[in-house]
Image 1 (cartoon, rainbow over the protein chains, first blue to last red):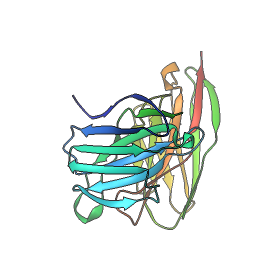
Image 2 (image 1 turned 30 degrees about the vertical axis):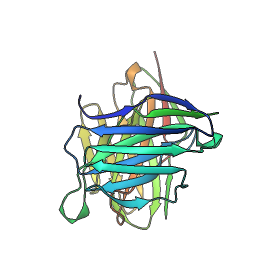
Image 3 (image 1 turned 120 degrees about the horizontal axis):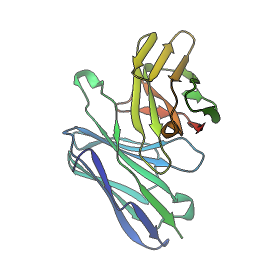
Image 4 (image 1 turned 135 degrees about the vertical axis):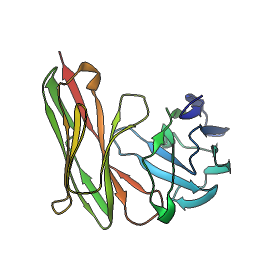
Length: 116
Length: 111
């Protein structure tokens, strides 16, 4: 596997279900990100992890719960979602350099989530 | 805060040249990316400008003027496969890892 992978690619869930999205990066990067992309809207940053520590939570509802067990893996745990949470969820990774600057972000293919 | 403005849609024909403009206002600037995103796929990196001027990469070039808050992506010798959304993305000057995405310009290339 190369680059950034995400599973599943498609997910349909009811509002009472609990599911998890998985992201894995094979690039040796030290930062990982979750984004939400809704139709006709810009990508919205949800969470940032740097060196496995959450450094940003962009006012995301608590029904979304991220987990970063190591620098290569990132999860997004979902529970009691709403239909308006239906979107493409993209994971990305980058290498954060000394002083906080970083190279471009590499994106995974995304998980298309539909909440019924 | 940040505000990024780019056209919603553009069309062009195969072999032509197209310029996609992006204007922005930001409280902290640390570079500007252009990404390409095909429908249902991940955004992929095209270019990065941090200093004023033109960066050329094969058929794609990107220009930045920081004083004017302006950038453009120039695509030459258009091909059908260039039909995609092109995202103007600001790299913020403060929070670690923070990118600000424009809504994207949907380019359609006709034969």
